[in-house]
Figure 1 (tube, rainbow, N blue to C red):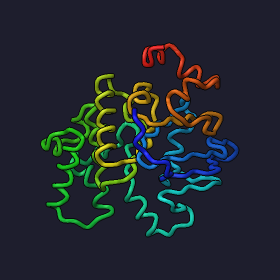
Figure 2: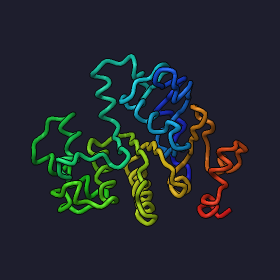
Figure 3: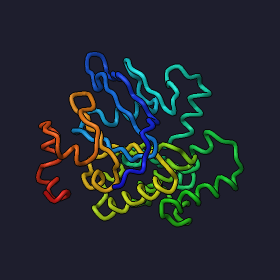
Figure 4: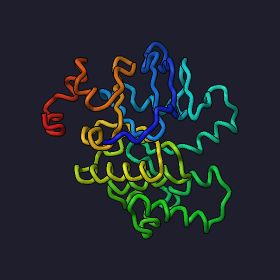
Length: 258
């Protein structure tokens, strides 16, 4: 896809080390996410892709290193500054992670209730508006997660991620478990939202079609570090064994036509 992002890094990760005791998951990792881009983040299963996401958003502790979001050091900022930053991002967790005891309307409203004091009427209007943004009808608002298809769960989770009109959206395996048609539609939805809302998207994915269709750049995690960041052509040209296997394997040949 055409380059529509800037070189301004909206997220800067430097020298990041994350682990449990002697078991290091990320070791002196560096990564920049540029404002306005869709960055695809790939790596082998268990390599630590989701760990990086959770560390950036503060759900996992780090052993060392520095994380800046919007130019703010997430270690040195106070609680008010942290909450202000957190309000400017949204997260779609793997499998959606909707609250099973809440209906769709209440799931979408959850982050709004956490950060804002608004009327019930406005809360309802926000929920319906966000459902429309992800291509779902108003009547879905009263359903519970158990009544939704896999694709609808992902769309509701995306609506919740968009509830506070964020500038950054973290997507953790957004197309996993979806059939190819639904996955393709979800990629197109993400691209449309990124373009119309000016979002920066950090997408953890295994989906080769998503990398080809939606991502401006790709970052590859391996050996506990970022091995390479660049375009799809950069990935295809790399001689690194894992990248060779990933981007030139049998499944890749079906996607990329090589």
